[in-house]
Image 1 (cartoon, rainbow, N blue to C red):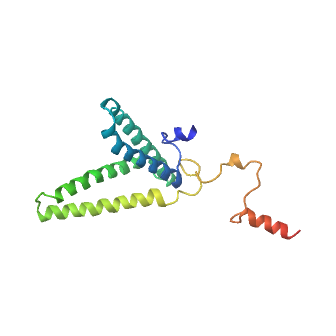
Image 2 (image 1 turned 60 degrees about the vertical axis):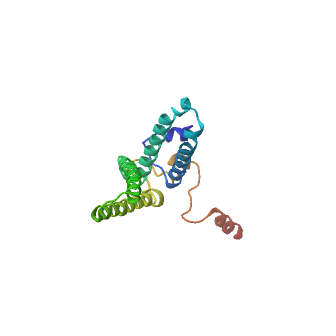
Image 3 (image 1 turned 90 degrees about the vertical axis):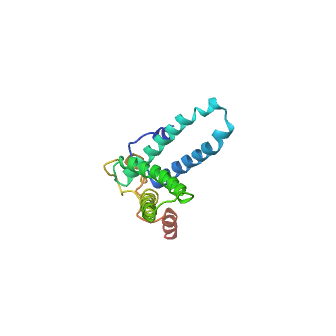
Length: 177
């Protein structure tokens, strides 16, 4: 149950794999709600759409904040990431709407294209930052490294050799006997 409650917490750090799993699950849930709820459920069940959406936004903000903590960024940047994503949905919808059937000047069209390029570059940087770059090595101001074992789990165990797999160590020790 600790993992479920960690989805709602803004404290601590989250590694790339955990963040990716949560984001894919949120995306799958959003697609399922977007496709299935409006057409198949009666109006009394559609009232659940708003609370479910609010929970999904909270989980998205919390996991993004923890992932940013792993990169040693403030969790408040998660609000900026959320805003950029929502603005891009709005902008691309407007851009596609204006591109088909609305007559605008060349200057306005150029401005729309420049904004599209800027939003695309910004979103690409956000994706690289959150999904591809490793977190800070070791503990930072937001907590311990989520990819490393805690000191309590190392009590009573032998220290790990740096970069040598266990099966090579056991082979080397068996060959000298």
